[in-house]
Every structure is written in C-alpha cells, then in structure tokens.
Amino acid sequence: MKKIIILSFLISITAEAARLKDIASLRGVRENQLIGYGLVIGLKGTGDTQTDYTNKSFGRFIEKLGVKITPEQAAGKNVAAVIITTKLPPFAKAGNPLDVTVSSIGDATSLAGGILIQSPLRAGNDQIYAVAQGSVSVLGDGKELHGTVGRVSGGATIERDIEANFSSRKMYRLTLHNPDFTTAARTVLTINKELGGTYASAQDAGTVDIVTPAAYETRGVELLATIESIEINPDQKARVVINEKTGTIIIGEKVRISKVGISHGNISLKILDEKSKKETAVDDKTAIFNGGTNVGDLVQALNKLGVPPKDLISILHSIKAAGALHGELETM
Image 1 (cartoon, rainbow, N blue to C red):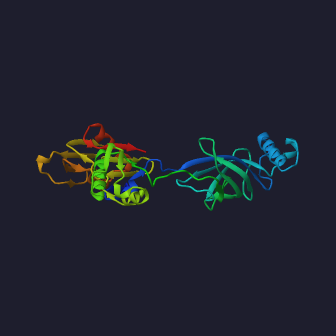
Image 2 (spheres, rainbow, N blue to C red):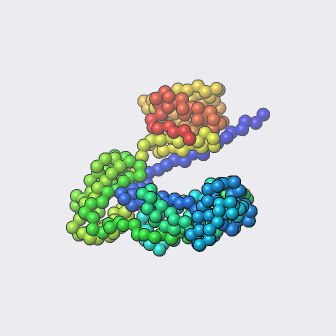
Image 3 (cartoon, helix red, strand yellow):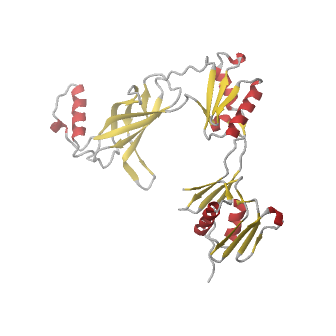
C-alpha cells in the first residue's frame, strides 16, 4: 500500500524595505462610512410583499410628488426597501461620484432591473454627505446571482466638501499599521535623515510625530509627499500562522526552535543543542536538527517523512506548549 504524503504550503516572510505610506497612515486621513434608507422601484414582481414600512415609505414618497394615496393603495410587488452603504474617501469634494451598495431588508426576492430612487446618505454624525440614485446591477459570481444585493456604479453624488486643511499644519502624526518599537525607531531615524534635522519623534510603538520644518511651512502637501515615499525596513514579531482547515502554514523568518524531543506516532523528532554540532538528518522515521533551527526547515523535513498537515500542526502546538518554539503561534 502506497504512502500518501500531503504537503502543507510553506511561505517564508522576509522583512524588506517598504514605503512609509504602505506601513503607516496619517492621523485624520481616513474613509468615513455612509448609510441610508431607500426604495428600489421598477421590479418585475420580485419586490416586497408583506412589509408595511415599504408601503408607508412609498406612500410618503408619492405624496412629495403631489399625489396622495393610502399605504394600502401603495401596496405592490414592484418596490423593495433597501439599506444603502458606501464609503466617503478622504479629501472628498462636492460633485464627486461614489459607488453604492444596496441590500434588501424586506422579503423581496430580487433587485434585478430596479431603480434606486433619490436617497440621502448620512455619516455617523447624522449629517447628509451624499445623495444616491440610479440603476441597480445585481451582484453575482457569474454562476449564481445574489439577487437581494446590488450595486449602483457612480450612483451617489457628494454634496459637501470634507474640510481638511493640511497645508498650514505645524505638526503631523503618523500611525503605524503594525505597532512595533523597532519599526517606530527606524522610522524616526530615517525621516530625520531625509529632512536633515530632528523633526520626527516616536511617542510610542505606533505613533510618530513630525514637526513641520521651516522650509516646508505652508507646503504640507510637499512635505507629506516627501515623507510617504521614504523606505523603511519594518520589523516584526516571530510568528507562525496556521490555517487548520486548509493545512496552510505561514512562517515568519525569525521563528526558532530550541532543544526539544518529541515522539509522535512512529515519528521521532530530536532538536539538539548547538554544542552537539550535529547536522540536520532525515531517515524513514527520524528527524534530527541542531538547536536554533527554524520552523521552515522543520516543516519541510516532516513533510519528507510523510507527516500529514493535521499531525504537523499538532507537533507545532506541542513544541510551543513545551516552550521550545520561540515566537507566536496563531491558529485561524
């Protein structure tokens, strides 16, 4: 009977230089969520059938157009109540278009072919920032349509500017996406070297403040353009990420294993201390490593021994529990 060997995917993550704009964001520059309630009309009998709020909403809409009707008269299957969602980008200006997503909240079976009628979109402060209207395109993957969720491309128009005067600021604050003291210190050193003075300082592992140099007064855009293109070597914690459903193992380059011995079924695993001066060896049932070996070598060797992903993951958890795996072990 042939032995079946299942290989796990192994990805070694190497820290390389990255642009500052890709590992940090400027405080105050972010997207804002917008939400609204609206009606989709023109449906071919696939709208809401037993939702009073749809009929009342449609009745009020018709009254605004000068026609008075009762909710009962407004009842029909060609209208659906929807929630509208989108994101307002930073530095948004009045008149810019936005794509919106509409999702049915009643018992409509499909929004295909419908038209979203004019609906206001509000932010968390309850202020209206955009108005949406347009033809609904039903979402799908080409094989199956998700009829109760649709999209209106460019269907919303921004109604007010987002105030953000960065050009005359005296100080800017950067927030690291992955807070780390080493990365923050490297960021400060690199920015100060680029600007030719002591302008950047780290407040903590995730925050870097930058004082505007005299040469960049009222030229905040140019300053930020210079800073965000700077390349930084971000540091990272030693980490192993395991997806038990797929058998995928993602390994950081700095994960190490110290002296340990494990017996798992008919597999023997030995990691000796560095003084033993033994070379990595693999036979039919045994894997031997020097102390300080990395997890990547371990996984590859165990794959050669025919260890399936499920057992391999169990071995990694056991090594971590024994205190011999130096790094975080995260299971998805």
